[in-house]
Image 1 (cartoon, rainbow, N blue to C red):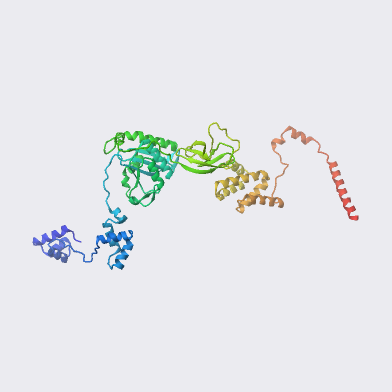
Image 2: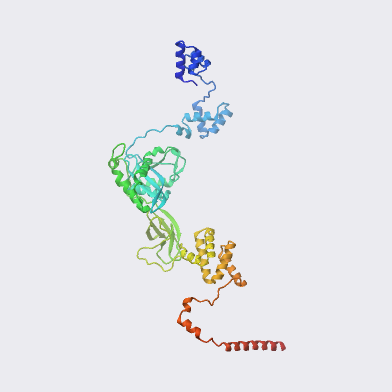
Length: 517
């Protein structure tokens, strides 16, 4: 298609007397096109499509409702029942132009939503991988942002789920003392049951949580429109450029302590980049419009059913907690944000603060309770000492242990096998044990009972070589008592041989007499 400016130039050059051939040569346009442009006076004709399909808007709106929004069914009714020749893509375009369906929502432009005091807060999460305590760790940052006053509350978690989301909101809103009317979130399944955007249906559990924490409303933005909560998005950018650089963290608790101080004490006094307003002062003004929290808000809690073992411990999250009392049975562990409470038959037995992140396989007791002598069998105990003793016996045993570690499908089975093999090594002669382990490795056997049967078979066949029992340690031979014993006379065992011969003769005579009678 020839541009409008070139069309005007062709028409003006022709009016000035330039020939069609010369215009075609200089502007590199065919002579036929030059003649058509001159005939149109340099203005292109508006060509109307004769086959353009138009369907009555009221008819489409009614049909959209009757078909429950399924455009494919609308196309079938129009083409088959009403004999309207219209393409499916044309029908979908008309439906979007009329503002019907989810596609119309995607085509609409975003409106500029003004900042209103007390109206809106925004929440989002962002994954990170940082060095904490000398090792790389994957964490999830959770940020709550008051849009008008620009106040933030930040905390990091090793993972994020619905329970931790409620714990975070409980801590953040308790810190603020107020809540906004609406909370803008993405379409996360932690809060959204089904649907997206304006059609999102929230999880009843989260709706009830919002009612007890100031009665705010969850609002999910449209898909691929994360700029609707641009305040919290820019907040994460601020975390990456202002909080992480130049800081070191000894633990996850140290990270959260620094994040709390940074978000609630430092940047809250720093003027905003665009407005030059201080968030702390804006928050004091916004308090009048925010919703004040009720005097009592139930703390988020999760209930876990556990069994008390024979030593009086209940397992929870990789650690073992002592249960007061003498009996055994089922207990209920109530998990809160930073502590647990243990109940049995509605009676509160104990309360523990949750250990630091990364603490596992610990036996925890209340202060003043002495440690029991017995060690719980269900606690995971390492087998490093047993492995080192076995590997020192022979290279064949070391190679078999490497095979055993690869074959074990769980750490508990691995520990059980290694302890069983170590116990077997203490029962058998070293030569017999090493040959049994070598044969088990040859046939890729990882069953303790089979290894014992191999040792029994070798013992019956007497196919293993044992070292001489007369070889003594040089230290023993150098002792004075050993040297004195070497000079003594050998013992006289003749009387034992005579008695043995007499017993043999008596047995033989008895057998003959028995046969003669």
